[in-house]
Image (cartoon, rainbow, N blue to C red; front, side, top):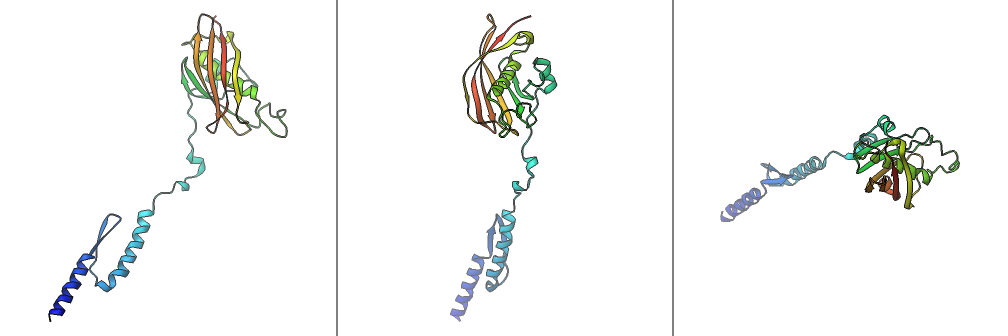
Amino acid sequence: MASTVFSQSLFSVQTSSISSNTICGATLPFKHPFVQLKSDITKIRRSSVVSCTSTPDSSDTPIELKYPAFPTVMDINQIREILPHRFPFLLVDRVIEYNPGVSAVGIKNVTINDNFFPGHFPERPIMPGVLMVEAMAQVGGLVMLQPEVGGSRDKFFFAGVDKVRFRKPVIAGDTLVMRMNLVKLQKRFGIAKMEGKAYVGGEVVCEGEFLMAMGSD
């Protein structure tokens, strides 16, 4: 009799010790006999694992929706009002950041329809390095040809370059992102020194120092 009472007590202790289980933060009561608990817990755990791990997968997002477009601070019409360049030598399509008289970031969408590709080169279209430098200088012009600085589009010239390095080729399909920063301005002499870097996909493809000569009306 004593052994029967003891075994019943032991069974109640075992049952109460596993009468609740926490899975994924939820307390699950169990009222079935001990023999059935194992299979029930297995079923619940399997379903709980599915519910705990089923989170939205970013890979389900279509690629065309993953990458936001560059912002537009100046569109091509505003650029044409500032720069005197025209086809086929206007090499800035959009300005995405602008601090008057300090810096600007512009982009050039490089396409196979650009007029320089048939000759540079027919078998391997690469954007000429001198045109990358020219495009960066035009972004520098957008910094300088502003009322805040006092530049004049009729008397603004690309005066010199130094320490220019080309790191990687730029090909059709690339987006050339160019940052130009004003380093030094001597208004008395109308000379501005700028530093520039051009990127494709976050990697530097061209960099150098630029000298601009400004005039006044």
